Amino acid sequence: MSHRIESVAIDGPASSGKSTLAREVAHHLGFVFVDTGSLYRTVALALLSDQNSPFNEENPKIQKTLSNLNISVIPSPSGARITMSGLDVTTHLRTEEVGAVASRISAWPSVRKALFDLQRSMALKGKIVMDGRDIGTVIMPEARLKIFLEADPTVRARRRVDDLRQRGIHASYETVLADILERDRRDRERPIAPLVAAKDALHLDTTHLTIDEAVRWIVDRY
Image (cartoon, rainbow, N blue to C red; front, side):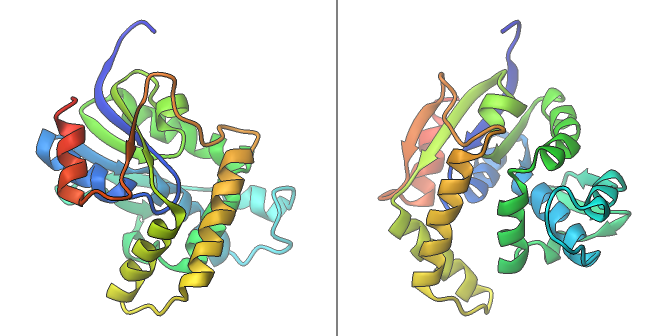
């Protein structure tokens, strides 16, 4: 590796606290926070909005939607705003439906290819904290600090249910846990950029940590 980028890459499974920690770490370091999961959710929203059927990667209508994507990321102190064709869609990205579709299409090579250049261009600017599932291995392998988060699936499910309820969305713990376990399987087994820790990543288990404790642990190692 020829050089390091003054940035932090945070990878981990669904609901392991990636976005929350990345946002707080970025705040402490004075860096820009980029949630790449929101980019996949934006693609999912585009596909749902176009009502493509059948819903598979080979569908020409889906490929047309992907080829016409116009996604922009606008940094802000609280985290990046996401626009699609000039329309701010940030507040529409956190539904369970969009999340489920995003998890499914994240394994599609055409989707990963469509988003690679956008993520890579942001990474090369440096001084960012970027979270996702392949940041330290694919998108930003030159990051000065790479973190791989872990947490017990039952704890992740409870966190997810609590987060949804705070936003007024009722969710069954059993359903959320099953969804997390299925997402874990898909992320680990996908042929393109599977969820795996970079060889030089530091592992952090957040099962029994508060947000402040986890943030301090990361910042202290930068």
